[in-house]
Length: 320
Image (tube, rainbow, N blue to C red):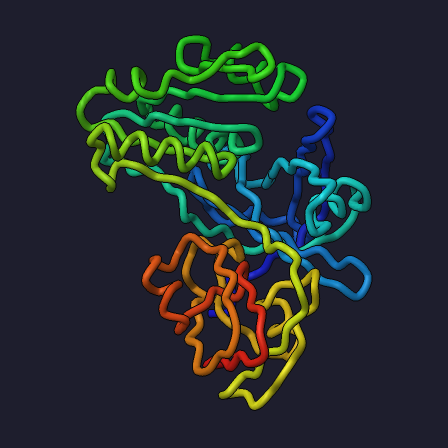
C-alpha cells in the first residue's frame, strides 16, 4: 500500500476564520458521499504547485455523521515549505483537488469513561470532529484549549456557546495558562488524555502525565512534523538501482518518489511508521526528526524515516 486510496473533490467553500486560519470544505466530484471516518482522522491533500507536487496531512474537522462534505482548517505558515501558503493563496472555490481516504492515527479510545482534551492553536481541529462524535454517542468529554489571543482563537465562539460547561479557553496574551497538574490530579478513574498542538505543549503534557502516574496507554497525542529544508545530499537505492540528489527544499521521501519508487506512507509526518527504511551503507550524519523510531534506532544508523529526516555526508544507500 503506497498510501490511502484517493478521492477527486471540488472545493465547495473557503471560510477565513482569522488572520492565520482558513477552513476549506470539499465535495466529491462524482456527487457521492465520502467514506466514513472517525474523530481524529486525517486526509492527505495533494497540491500541484507548478512542477512540484506536495502532499500534506490535515485533520478532518467536519462531523463524522455528515458525509456529504469533508472540511479541514489550515494555519498559514509564512516560513514553511509552501503547502499552507498554496492553499491560502492559490486555491479557490470550484477548483478540483485530490484527497486521500481518511486514516486515523489519533482515534478515541471508546473504552474510556471520560475523554480529556488538551489543544493548542491549530491543534483544535481533530477535537472538533471528536467532540461531534462523542456528543452523538452521549460520551463524556472536557476540553482545555490554549490560544495566542482572542483574535486567533479558531472556533472559540462555537465551542463556548454550544458547550459552556465543557469547553475551557485560555489566552496567552492575557497570561491565562492551563493548570495541568491540578487538572490531571482531579480526573476520575478511566479517563483518557488527548493532546494536539505545538511540540512543546505535547511534550509538556506527556511528561507531566507520566510523572503523575498516568498509564501510557491512557495518553494519546498527534503531531505531524513538516519536513525541514537542509543541505542537498545524494542517496542510492540498492534494490531499484537508482540514485538521486535530494534537494534543499524537498524531503527524502519526495526525492525517492521522483524516481518512480513509491514507499508506503500514511501520514508523511514522522508519526505512522509506514515509510521506515533500512540503511545499508552510510558515511555521514543522520538528522533524525521523526517521533517513531526509538533513540537506540536513531543512534544505530541503520534506519531512517524518509518523510521528515535528512542526511549530511558522502554516502547513503537505502534498502529500496
